[in-house]
Each structure stands twice: as structure tokens, then as C-alpha cells.
Length: 335
View 1: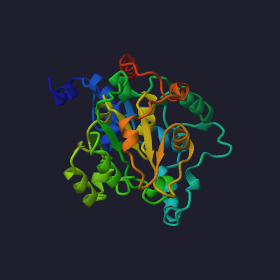
View 2 (view 1 turned 135 degrees about the vertical axis):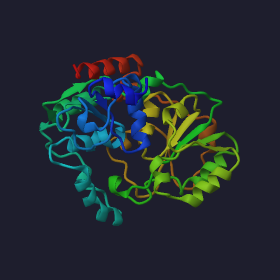
View 3 (view 1 turned 45 degrees about the vertical axis):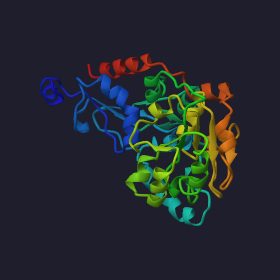
View 4 (view 1 turned 90 degrees about the vertical axis):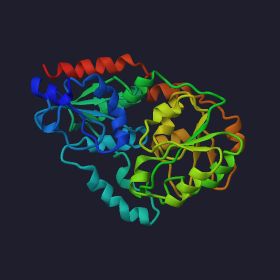
């Protein structure tokens, strides 16, 4: 039976509004388990599950599934979760600071956060650290512990010493970290092409890099370079990380998730791009390369992730059954 036909039989159920492919990646495991009750538009649903920071839908049970560790868990979501406070307002204040190449203080954690009312009815925490942080900062919301939905579906990631190095340059968005050229795409393209002469390289661009047509000339050079494979920008990144030799990133949240999954990780850091919060913590545990440095030696023999205690504090071990439990809980909210 088609989804349209089901909508005519069943009462409104669960909706998954999202704006970008990287948000859908985190929602897809639940969407697949609840296709028989999926409904649109969101304002007619009994349950709304979001991976973005949009305002909740009135009359529904609103669930927030974080889709990025680096900013969402550490500084942004505790602020976004406040009622009548919208992310676009705070982000706009950072634009002049970004042009001056200064840090963006509006995205730092407040000195005294206190306990704030949540905009959502339920928040899904990735690991023990996020449970503690959210329970401390928000009130009147259920803190669920189903963990990282997209990684749950993989059941964990395995590394392969003969596999490719996966390069995950983020997109250039100065508003968040307050520095120019947040992405390593342009500045590290030559080093990556040199690395590809000795080890295979898989490049996964951020979907917003393609959407905003950033660095088109550099992307064409990479696509034509020997030893480099360009993955579709909207491909599910966790499928690409399976069997990787190592991961090279900059300020992408996928760097944390790859490290927590046991993959070797290194950072490609541009000058003047700050590494606050979790970015700094990851940098303390992995090799950091500057512009112009060779990546060959690291790529040929990358050191595996070693701080398992830090990883376990950030992410619960991936278990596919957690998504079944999550879907069952959402289904129960409709009854």
C-alpha cells in the first residue's frame, strides 16, 4: 500500500521535517521504521522528530535528535532550546566578528546557564556527557538515551588498513566558529592530491558546499586527480566511513563521531580558525596538520583512536536495536 493510501486510513502519526540531506541521514532509520504512520504536513502530526533547530510544532510531541556533536551538543542546543530564542538571531551577531577574524562569543556557553525550559518535549542524548549537560541546563523535558540514531543503524564502524583515507572538509560558514576559511577544501587540496599518489582517497564534501557552489574550481581539480574518488555530496557519510583507513577532517562533527567509532583521525587546520570546546578536545587527541604540510606519512600508517574513555562519554556504543526501541516509544506517543 502506498504512503498516500495509508494516510487515508491511519490517523496522523510521526513527521520528520528536515531541510538538508545531512539532517535526513540522522532521521532515516526512524523514518524507515515508521513508514506506516509517517504523515505530512508536520502541523497535523501527533509526534514531530527534528534534527534541525526549528521551532517545535504546536499540538505535537516534539523530539530533538542532535545531528552534530561539535556545535549542537556543546554550545548551541542548550541555547536553542530556550523558548522564544532563535538561532538565526544569535548567529547574525557573529557576522561582523567573522569579517574581523575574531572569535564569536555569542556561541560560547553562558557563565551561569542555570536550568532553562526546553522548546522540545524530548531530547535524545548521544552519550553520558550529553545526558548530564542537558539535564543540568534544561527542565520540563524528557532526556532520552537512545543514542546516535544514524550510527546505531551501522552497528558500529570498522577500520581497514587497506581502505581509503576519507577526507571530510566542512563548508565555509564563518558565522559559527568566527574565522575565515573554516573549510580545509581549498587550502589542503594540494596536500590531499599528493597523498593520493600513495594511498587511495575518498572525498566526501559537505552538502552545503555544493549547494552554495563553494570552491568549484578546486572540486573539479580533485575530481580529475588520480587516486581520488569523489563521493556524492548527499551520500550517507557513515556508509562511506565503514572500512576506511583513516579520516581527515577540519571542524566537521564527523571527526568526533569517527574517533568515537575507533577510526584513526587527523585534523587539517587553517590558520586563525579557532578550536573551541569539543574541537579543542579532539585536537588534543589526534595529529594536527597545517597548510603545506605533507600528509603521506600519516596516511600510510595512521595511529588509531586511543582515548576510549573520552569516546564512551560522548557516544553510547552503537546498537541497531536502540532504533527499534526509539520507534516504539514514538509510536506509543500516538496512542
